[in-house]
Image (cartoon, rainbow, N blue to C red):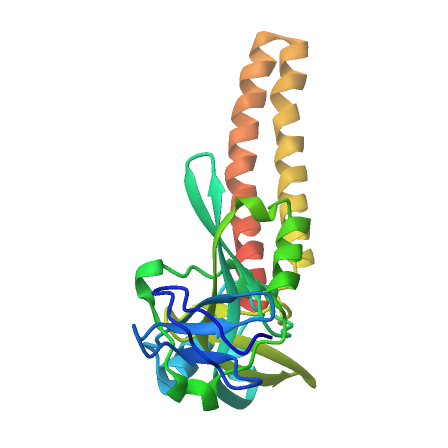
Length: 262
């Protein structure tokens, strides 16, 4: 790495010390990150959620429709930590303007970080006082650009690159003897997890299949009546409607029971 780097905003010399990654320009105050390949802007997304609020958001997510019933009461939260996690922020050209894409700048098992929404207006210049709470980038910019290329975004379409540290609460919890991790993004409160105790789909599929079979059979009554004569058709329609109304009650009760148990 060269001894002298240039500020991406004002062009002034930065003169970082050997091994220094995060630098604030003395001329304009811009925060930059010095990668082996180039110097890029360095931003931070400021948190709006404290730990107590984050725990409440975790409980709400656990009680949601995607997780097993009563996960918020049955799981045991073991730990909660706060850090600023690094992401590579790329702007790419599109047919109608531009789009933003994200790539993790450090190792993580939560791929949903790529789908975060980071409005440019919410990004602030990084403050080196946050270094103690920030995860250091381990994925070079060049590697992130190669990943973008593998996703069909050649680097000539990338018009802007920056490093962004986003505030994250990492919660680890136990459920049925297995450990899980969920992230709460502390700027928007979004919950993210790749693996979690999800609702079982099989009971819902069985209930749906039973309902489909019942009403398919009932729908055959008018068809059979039509093949006989007009009076038989009318009777078959009434029979179909009557039995359909009767069958709807236990089928609804079955669906409600599954929703309460799963």
